[in-house]
Length: 183
Image 1 (tube, rainbow, N blue to C red):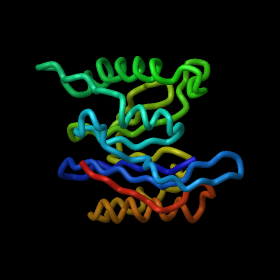
Image 2 (cartoon, rainbow, N blue to C red):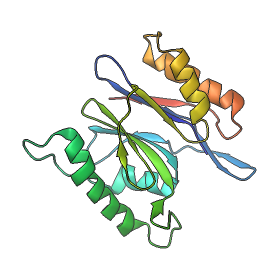
Image 3 (cartoon, helix red, strand yellow):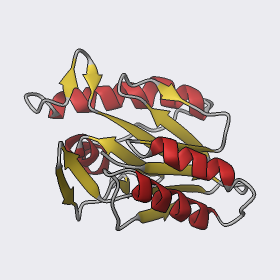
Image 4 (cartoon, helix red, strand yellow):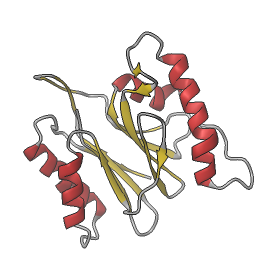
């Protein structure tokens, strides 16, 4: 599984960090392809994944986020235009790959865009959070505890590093190296 963390700092900078493991049962594979990346078609989107690397590849290299219409707020855009195009893209590029079951996609994603942090669930629900941080994947609970206990720490990169290290210490599906990007 994984541990992917997103934090929105006080000045609106979006930070996302993740580990490097792909796991299946007892197999652990340390990957060179990253679980945190910018969308190559619009680098205003910073994305972190948990789940299918195939869906991550689609998000990074194929998906073309639609333009925000003039006058539309970002939450409406994400829940309406972004998610509709994302679903179409996933459906177009995942046939016969086993990443959809009973209408649910194999994964959860953190999307940072325009000073906002979103949690996109496997049913493509677009969530926003009361806290300014989120964690997904098998290491999420440990990471969330760490992030909560370091809310007083101003250095966001340090908070994410501590949370990823804590997850790696206690969750056997979370492995370094850890990567952190900001937007």
